[in-house]
Image (cartoon, rainbow over all chains, first blue to last red; front, side, top):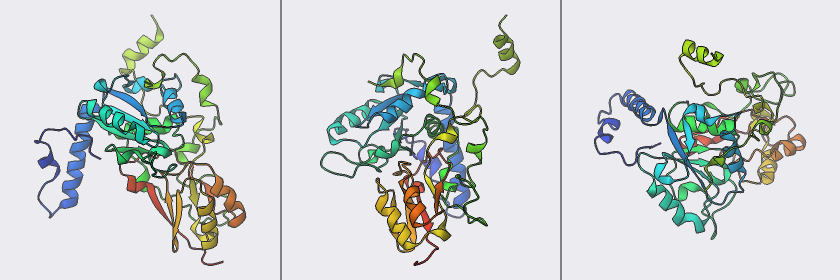
Length: 225
Length: 116
């Protein structure tokens, strides 16, 4: 992840120390420094510009729910902005149709640095559409993506987690996940969720439609253009 | 004087951390599949690969390659596995899947059920 492509030249020497001896320690230290920098730059307030590059608009529905009272994005210091000039983070959905390529590049160039690009949803990650004359198939073909958020669509909580990861406030969990359920004594008895699912099952309140609370008036409407 | 003002003075923090409490709706969301390698056979894996609409699954010899980023959580592999390899595919329950590297989203599932 390189959220500082426009950083002046004084930063890179810090991040690539030329001592191969304790490389892992140096890398860890560099990563810690980078996290601190990101937290200092983006930790308190972050403005998000959404970019729909041909999605079915369900990702946009979920992004819109972020501003609703139930998820309340603003309590975390995140805001949607209608102008890329004001944006720190570009939230890109859709498979990047080729007709949108120029607009996507211009949007990215219009953003002041440092900037973060987040690819959102299975389309943007290259899952749904293959590369063909009409679509690039994934966002990273055109823009330098820093954070990938899977899901079709990613739920508002997944988006919140992704934004937290993007600004270095939350740790990413995927490297530790294997999507392998260890063989129990009898495979049918261990329920519908894997052993790693403790966090999800912790609530006993039962399922409850998130959209119900989210129908409140929402002037920012997810930062759609 | 409103109570929230006193509470704010006492706590000092006005914003809550993510997530403030477990989300009630999270348990009802579809999540990517998780696999039981010992119940997977090559034939069953091929059927899962064939039924995946977003090409999130592919098989390389005795390894089922699962691209979490491409998965749309449609559950068709779980449906197919109910016939092909009962119990081999369940819901993972994971939804906080954001990653800073695309490669970490591609998972290798060993197929330990052999040829059956």
